[in-house]
Length: 159
Image (cartoon, rainbow, N blue to C red; front, side, top):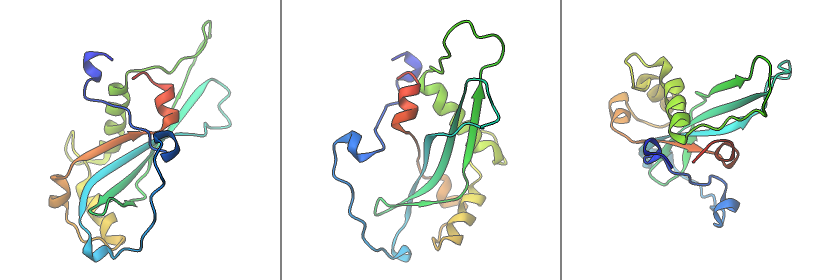
């Protein structure tokens, strides 16, 4: 772990890799729940079939975490693909420090924000309202955000 990676840590997303029992789904009433944070889950995606060069694709799915620890998907997904160009003389490696991956994810997710290093809070609030969650942009602005990397992404990058 390098100095720049001290603020990043790996936590498995899938229950079987964490050795935990899967959560039991309970019905809930959204009107009784509050939003407690923004969660961005990053997973490997299928590369474009037209691309014959070595490539890697990652999808970023955004959720609001609610007070009962459930999450509501916002349908504000993002994605990124990387390809190796030119003559390849060595095996392809996508290894990068976790902090760099998380920074890139935040940069891509924040691309539509009206101000730098922020999120498009109005869009998040509108997406939440469309799902029956009453929250405004100001309330969302003060909540924490978390970037989770899937086991496959974690295996691809350095931690």
